[in-house]
Image (cartoon, rainbow, N blue to C red; front, side, top):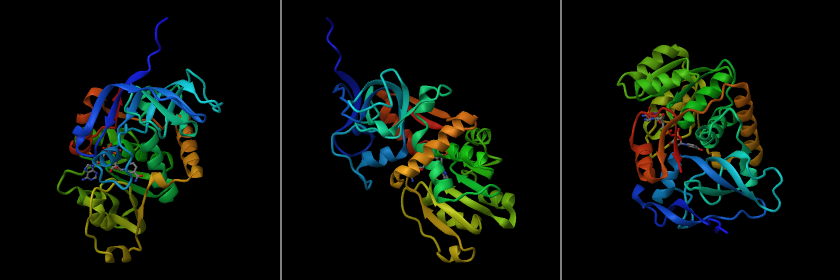
Length: 329
Ligand code: NAP
């Protein structure tokens, strides 16, 4: 009788540091699911910027070493823990978190962080749902209190969270403006819900946005790079407008007086702090959008597990996003 395979390929991090600390190993034990957990055969895993911050050791949350990064996997249930009734072997699923890490051939996840993958979506799209769409929904609806008829500027609209924000905002009846750093990115943004796209690499793009919005300004800004844009964002807002700080890679100086003249708000967003109830609300919105057909995750660059170091370099240093970055085992 052939012996059952009990090892897999997985990326391991033994020390915090640059992308080179990501080591692909071929003899990592396949984890076993505990009572309320499932084991998933991974077909694709999303790559998120936060995974590079955590890997570098500079982020507030640090996992115990060694660890395998990756939270957003799509794949097939391989086995389930004793008390899991919601899933069975063979089910197609995606996760909003994993316990053992998603940059691997197999991953264990808590059953309540696993959702059925709708037939409409392929594996890579499944790996592009969780962090992007839950974050975009949280920023726009839960924290930004967006209302139909308002306008939103998605500042950094061509990546995972940005495209999700454009699709959700458009479905909610907002006027949607989005930025990207390339022509191709701008076209992607326009195909995914934006009424108008601007190039954030162009010297005068802020004047173009001001010209487009007129004296009224924009009601909400979903900001992906606050350390660059927060001060100028305050100039683009309408009265009572709010900047949703989704992405930030360092400090920036602002003049607080700029918030007084229009009673603007600067609101931090953290998906990590969402309550179970808020996560369920995000999931409901996502499933509604998939069923209705307006929610279609867009996959950008794809990398095999062997190229994980390059993926981590590119997600931070390469301009020209055209959707969500994914790893394929
Ligand atoms: P991503 O797929 O790598 O996309 C990055 C986006 O930023 C691209 O659209 C990129 O555009 C854009 N960008 C580059 N330079 C910019 C500039 N000067 N001004 C505005 N945008 C610029 O990353 P993501 O997954 O969408 O995540 C976006 C940010 O949100 C990251 O900082 C991430 O850490 C953060 N995030 C936060 C939370 C939270 O809970 N707060 C959750 C998820 C993500 P081009 O490539 O076209 O130049």
